[in-house]
Amino acid sequence: MNKKQEQTTIYYTDLLNEEFSSAKITPKKIGDDYKYIHQGIWKKFTHIFWYRIVMTPIAFIYLKLKFHHKIVNRQLLKGKKKEAYFLFGNHTQALADAYIPTFLASPKDCYCIVHPNNVSMPVMGRITPSLGALPLPGTFKATKNFLIAIKERIKENKAIVIYPEAHIWPYCTFIRPFPSNSFHYPVSMNKPVYCFTNTYQKRKNGKAKLVTYIDGPFYPDSNLDNVDAKEMLRNEVYETMCKEALHSNIEVIHYVRKKENG
Image (cartoon, rainbow, N blue to C red):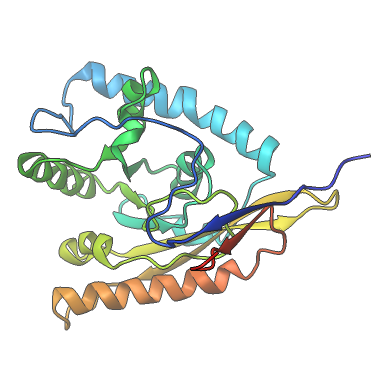
């Protein structure tokens, strides 16, 4: 007989800044010399090799075996091969969140804005850039190169993936509040936004499966200034994700806010 999913409890104090990933990595600083775009044939080959030949089948097997993963509203992104867009999602898994956008946007390639942790690992840190990782810059010049890279991928009609919650809360079934900062990219580049909401739903054996809902498109309002346009786009996405999060009906991890004097 299959055992039911056991529930654990995590206590938190800060919805915006706490991190509950088990990985302990010392991030390197993304400086002036970090190269976001490689033009050589070898680098193009390694992208195809790691992204399509290695990672995609591994990701498919992993998501199906571990999470019985299902995508709802996949048709919203079909036929968007010649259209660039931004994908915003909730951050509830370390490995799965790296894999899921691949299948949401397929056959389009995804490039994901990530914490420098993702390129700081001894072995995988050298591979993740070939998988589409765009680490956040640490200097002024690196920031210029970072923005150039995003604009280049947009010109190539790729998908740019952003996890606005920034921190991993495993199996979290609610959407944490996030700032409007990351909506600067679609507003400044006037590109549509789609969001995806990872939910956890009970299987017949009592364990959790991962179901991802796609919504959109949401468009920047050109009649507003940048600040108001970012806020409006953020609110539309946040409210939609909160609505989709209600599909979760199992808590693998129960998150409880610590009492101030507790």
